[in-house]
Length: 102
Ligand SMILES: [Zn+2]
Ligand SMILES: [Zn+2]
Image (cartoon, rainbow, N blue to C red; front, top):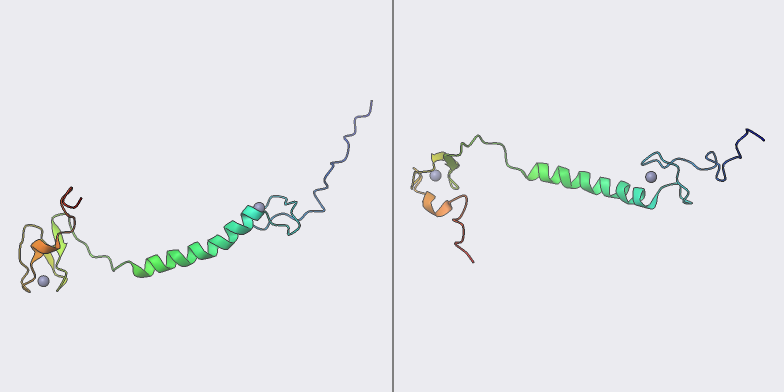
């Protein structure tokens, strides 16, 4: 009885590892189809992330009991109905009451 193992049917050396996941790919391009999709998507996701970062307004410390006046951007107490600039804060509630619009 021979102890030697038969050679693998598919030689690992003849296939380059996928540059994305590092696993051996048997596709002719050397990249798994799902990996090439992921690679193409990564660029787009990175771009979206950058866009989202650029769009976020500068962080302003606003407590739950405070809000910003939409006109002069001054921090106002939530119970305050009018800002010093004359802006009606009642009309600019951050969240409308539940069930108001159906
Ligand atoms: Zn892969
Ligand atoms: Zn104001």
